[in-house]
Each structure stands twice: as structure tokens, then as C-alpha cells.
Amino acid sequence: MTNVTYTIIFYLFAAITVFSAAFVVFSKNVIYSAFSLLFTFFGVAALYVYLSADFIAVTQIVVYVGGILVLLLFGVMFTNKIMTTSLRTEVVNLIPGIAILFAVTGGLLYVFYTRANWYSTGVQLQGSVVERIGLETMSRYVLPFEMASILLLLALIGAAYLARFDKVQNKER
Image (cartoon, rainbow, N blue to C red):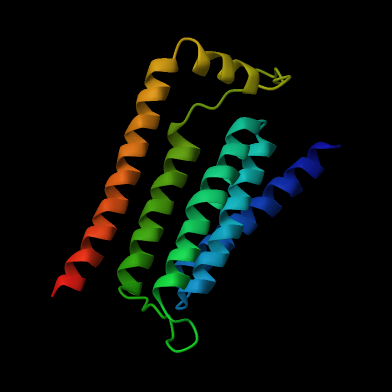
């Protein structure tokens, strides 16, 4: 493919990501925001693939789309009666938010065009880094990996206990 094709693909996925993220922020319906968050996560994953970061792209899809977004959707759908109530949010502080948006965008563009020294080595990365990450995780970093998994398990048990404790307490009253 030509350089122009790569540029068009990049801008297409960047536009999908930005517009769906804007819809997440400005939508008044929580369900619509959650579903547009799906497109935002997929757009970010596509940009990772475009940058040859295949492991991070797959991790983005598995963790954010497969875990967090599904959890968010089920949480919203199970805690509220979808048919009887309207799940609406109010977009407040629109003027200060837009002012902060322009300030941050201006600052980023200023740094991008005037302060950053960009260089390219011209070397294209070949192959995948997944094998190397797997070997490092299961050899040199196995203890921190297992400690993180135990910490996550304890957090899950604690969250389940807190959710259950609240229900037991309400039944006693």
C-alpha cells in the first residue's frame, strides 16, 4: 500500500475514535454513551494495530471491550429498569468544558509544532512482541504477576462481600 493509503486509514480510525468519544461525553442517554464507548475502544485498538502494537491492541479489546464495557453495560441494565425509567444524564458546565478543551488542545498543538524534536529512524519493526512479553512475564516477572493476580482476587472478594453485606443488613431491618 502507498503512503497516502496509510494516512487515509489513520485519519479514518482517528475520526471514528474522536467522534465516538465526543458522543460518549455529550450524549444524554447512558446506554447510548456506553455503546459509543465501544466504538471508541475499537478505534483505539485499531490505532494500536496501525502502530504495530499488536499485543496492546488485543489487550485493549480483551480488557476494555470484553471486561470493563460489558461490566458497565450489565451494571446499568441490571440496576435500573430500562423500560420504566429514562436513563438520562445532564451535560453540565458545557462552557467551562469547551474552554478547557480549547486550552488543552492549544497547549498540545503548541508543544507538538514548536517544542518537540521529532525524528524517525526509518527502521520498520518486524514480527510480534507477544512471545517476548510472555517469556518475561512467566520467567523474570512471575512473582509480581502472581502478586497482582492475588491483589485483584482480594479486591473482587472484598467487592462481593461489601455488596452482599449491604443486602444482609437491609433484610434485618
